[in-house]
Image 1 (cartoon, helix red, strand yellow):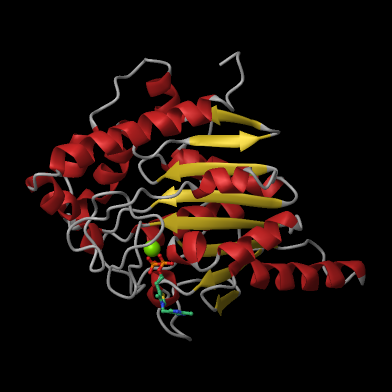
Image 2: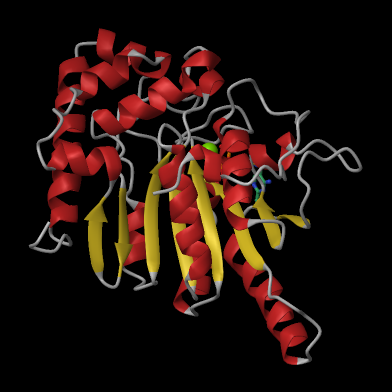
Length: 310
Ligand SMILES: Cc1ncc(C[n+]2csc(CCOP(=O)(O)OP(=O)(O)O)c2C)c(N)n1
Ligand SMILES: [Mg+2]
């Protein structure tokens, strides 16, 4: 087990970024860089993360970095990885760098899925992290394929009428060697999953729930609390998928094993402003029930992948 004392002191995400207070992406970048180290090339897909870096030469990110077009995370990584392989073949690299794509849910679930899917099918050797704030945050809170049922966005003013899609399951269907979900409420779990992803060849997909204080309408001091409640209510399930099998991890594993009681989805909905309209409306109870059913269905589907011995 890793403890906080084991984390490297070197900071590759520097102070003075232009992120909002309590931004989950900036905290996640700091942890991810500690796990991967300085021999990393970062590819940022158009998102809040393109902006929070600050502008050159005062960038808060101390790594080689490419900002790329919205739909191109997987394709850009494929090009960078091909370049690395060519340099390595010519003996011009002492150690091959890790290629990390950092993309939002809009750039992953919606506009970037074809490029990600192509790279995964080709077995491109890179880590893809989707920080999922369940909306297009950078352009002012529009709905995405990751927005949950009932949530307010500027394009779903009465609450989204559809369920979110389950992209981690879509990535598992690509038979890539490693898929994991993480939460900022469990940073050491995130750190260890990033380190594991670095040690595996091929395409690795890691997805983090990224509660956005201004977009989800809660105080910035509550970001970790909201992250934790998402896991405790089952609205965000922690697991990893390796060698064709899924394992629940951390707090989700304890919940599935009955060691801790699952909290009601309502507890999670009530600590954010984006569900306020739907909860106050005549459809509020139905939306809450549908989200509870969504949680049970997701757990049942994952249990189909969990080996008998767990
Ligand atoms: C083709 C294209 N359409 C629209 C945009 C404008 N745009 C930049 S970031 C963004 C939202 C990205 O949402 P997401 O991927 O979820 O990241 P977040 O902003 O939430 O961090 C949009 C629509 C763009 N850059 N390129
Ligand atoms: Mg987003």
